[in-house]
Length: 310
Image (cartoon, rainbow, N blue to C red):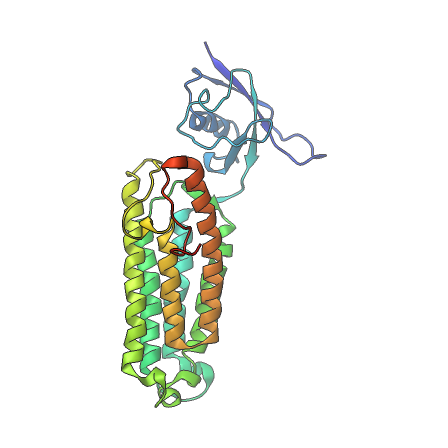
């Protein structure tokens, strides 16, 4: 017997009903998946591609797993569900590759063309050269992780996110950091005889950042191995720093930029590190709560981001 679902377009109060809705969709059985329903809706509406659809029940409960059957999601034959247009979508990988590309080009621009930009002749200090290498390597690492390590539970995100996310990296990590770090005030002659001219200080701070970056990469590999390719499997992450915190990748990112701030002794570096850490802590708290909610008593006692603290 056919399994019938009525799909209504969720619109703002007072707005006229959308053309083509309500839409009656016939499926083979209650075992038909949410993904099949979305495909039927997309076939009937040229604008509403599968990626743009967010389907909810009448009480606004979202139906999230496209691979689950409608019966398992609590949908019965004859029921009305509501679809919301999420707007134009873009792939997660495209967003990440775009946002990380900015600093890779912006930092060398200010390092190599500093005298022309500042209209003042100066030679870069060893600290500036090391800072350039670390900043570029950090974002090259992120690009490689996006291509070969990260597995995304969702294929797309709203198109607007590419502009919002890029603002953080292109402007805060790019146009905020680069001009000040690679300015005449930190040139070879300006830092001569100071701690920033001391090789032990420079390479000590750099070593801390490199170790933090390697640890961050290792946690990403652990997370990758938790989810087989092509699946949405979720498991409790274990081993290494996961024994102490739920999000060690964020903790090591914090350590890396703290070391970078110490190396550069620059207010712009401190501001970027502070903004990044605050945002990561918000994400860590959310992920920590989701882990505890999903796994319940099975989830080990650990902090969200900072070992033994929070």
